[in-house]
Structures are given as C-alpha cells and as structure tokens.
Length: 509
Image 1: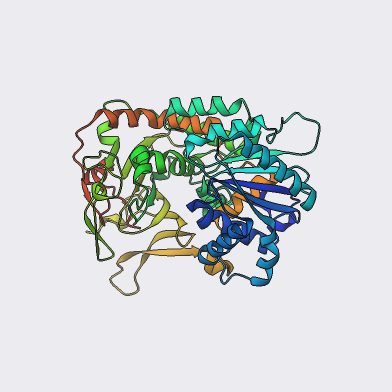
Image 2: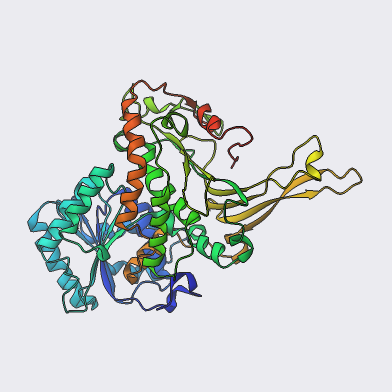
C-alpha cells in the first residue's frame, strides 16, 4: 500500500466503508473542526462511498436538527466557502443523531441497533471509527461500554470488520494517571485500535519534516551538533483562555501544549532516519529521541524550566484582562499560561545542542515555528567588522502561512560592502496554488485507512510524561510564584530570555 508521504493524490488509496461515531457531537470541536473536515473530505471524494456519521451526545435533538447545525458549522468554519448546496443536499443524508448519556447502558444498546440499520442501508460492513471528543474523565467509561455492548471488536476475530477509537488529548494528567488510563483502556482495546490524536501532526509542514530532512542531502548532512548551535520550537497564541477557565485551571500550559504538540515536534526534528516509512518504524525513532532527553535535576528546575502567567496588557492595541481576571479562574491562581524549557538530547547527533521550547497565551502574535539556528562561520574574514554577522536560520512555519524560510547573509550592492541578512521564503499556498487540507481532514482519513503514522503510541505518551512530570511536581511545590510575571502582548517573562544565555535570543515571529 502506498504510504501517505509518497502519495501524488490522496484519492489513489483504497479506503474501507465505515460508520464514524462522534461522542460529544454537540461540542465546540465538532462544530469548528470535525464537521468541516468531513465536509471537505466528502466534497473532494476522499471519504468511502459507503459512509455514515452518527453524532452521540446528551442533548435531545432530531436527525434534521443535527444536520442543520452541521451545515451552519460548515458554512462558518470550512476552509472552502461557500458551501456547495448541490453536494450538501446529498451528503447530509449520511448524518444521524443519537441521544444518550455516556454511562447509560440503554444508550449503547440503541446505538448498536442504529449502527446495524446503517450497515444495512449504506453497506458499511460493520466497520467503525469511534471519535471521543469528550472530557478525559469519560474516556474509560465510553470505551468500557463500547466493549461491553460488542461495538469494539476483538482484533483476533476472523471476520474482516474492524473497529478503531480516536482519543483526543490530554491523555492523562501526569505519569501515573497516563499509565492508569492506558491500563484501563487496554482491557478493551488492542494498541493497534487506539489512535491518540495530536492535530499538529496533521499539518502539512509537520508532515513535510521527514521529506525535508531525508530527501534533501544538503540539509541532512548539516543536521547535527557540528553545524547547529541550537534549536527553538515556539507555539505562540494571541488569545487568552476564553471560556476554558475550568479546563485551564486543571491543566495549565505545560499539559495543554508542551506535553503533546511540542514534544511531538521535537521528536520529529531530532529523530534518526527510520528503516522504512511504516508507522512502526517512524514511531520507534520518535520514542528513541524522547528516551534520550536528559532529565532535569532539581538544581536545574529554576533556570531550565521557566513558567509565567499573563497579566493585563494590550493585544493589537486593545486592552485585555489578566489571567486571574478571566472567567472561572481563581484570583490567586498559580497556573502557568507560559512555559519555556531548555532540554538536551544525549545521543551522538545532538550532543551538547540545547533545544529551547516555549509556548504561551496572550503573546504578541499567533504562530508556531521550528527554527534551526546554525553555528557562526569562522571569524577570519567577515566577522572583523564592528557589526557581527547574524547566524543562518532555517525556519519551518507550522501556522499560519505554512512554509519554510532560510536566512542567509548577503552583500548589499555598492562599494562599502555591508553584509545584510536576507530571507528566502517558500509558502505552500502560494507555490502550489491551493489551500492545504486542514489537519483534522488528514487525521480522520488516516484513521479510516488504518494508518497510525501520525498518531501517538503509548510509549511516546509515557516517555513524554516521564520528562515533564518532575517539572510539574516542582512547580506545584513552589506555591508563591510571582504571578502575573508578564504583560499580555509581551513575549513572556524575562527569565525565559535569561535562560538562553549570552549571545542567544528568542526569534521574533
């Protein structure tokens, strides 16, 4: 079977018929991401011809109401506008709604009956994808009920039907809770049936990382401690927490962004070439990176793991409130809305190269970027001037404006010969002339195909928590953090700048 990194067009791959069941179908994720993803997949011929979708949630509504709400969401949030009415009139007939509480046995019995009806109507052969867009506390009970009522199949059964479960983040709260969750769901699911989703891995630039590294010898030959000074990975957001106060008070920035998104990006940047492009081979190499990350000692916590919390400030000229004034946030909360880490990967390729990770809310602009900062050229010729040359930088933009840029030094025309950095820039949208698919489109499609390459494996999740849980424990023990310690609209606390040391600075996105 053709691998996704090699495909010329996604429709060339065989895809089984199936029913997709979305638990929590009335939630924000379904409206903003899942419904538009399904619409675009269907419009572009990427879904199987025999396909149906069932929304499972606690609110009572009819199939027609659910379809009308889905249409409104697609009209608002789809990357392609306006909605194609002719296609939608046919496509909406494949959407159905099922009302039940998540722990109600009768609801799963009636769900089974509905799915059997859809199998007969759409010839979906009993194949199932269950998408758990629910609070993490419901993961175990939903999976247990699905297994109890025969909706999750044994992987060893002789029939050709299959069942898979997509689990949204966060997977656990720390090392112990992640291990307990894995133990619990393992009673009902084989690892091959579990798809732990991280939508960052569905973005075009992230998928292109392996191609960029391993299909271009000019870069792979430089991808080591001999040529690279350090690596910066940034996930910056202008927005605050909005209505997610309850969630953020429990999670914080390290759990919400660093443990999943940023550790995934780090592992892809740093991994060794896999033996092939199979999901197993790629994920094996990612795990090796995480296993090689040097644990922080207690003495290093204070200067290699910086946290922050935004106070009042200005975003795009508009005054905004601080985190402690947000809805459902305690007035003395010590939850971090900013985190910066300095990590080392103790293997041959990356010996002595620091990896700097930073993520935060209420920063000056939205952007996610991986920046490779190369070592300075020898100072024999052009470093003797009063102004030091800037280092070469290779930057991969994950969002927005997905693309890759390279900063090099060039001579300015004229007799005085000043040297000035210039940027060579590649953007997916402008070069290929089309909007890249949304991450959720790719990931839903891959799950239906049974391709787990872009999903996190259990040992990846466990190893990531092993690295970050000691930091969380240390921060929890420091009750009197001086919060807030950065103003909304700034680039974070000053301690994060000091963490880089003399001669280095965070890139301005």
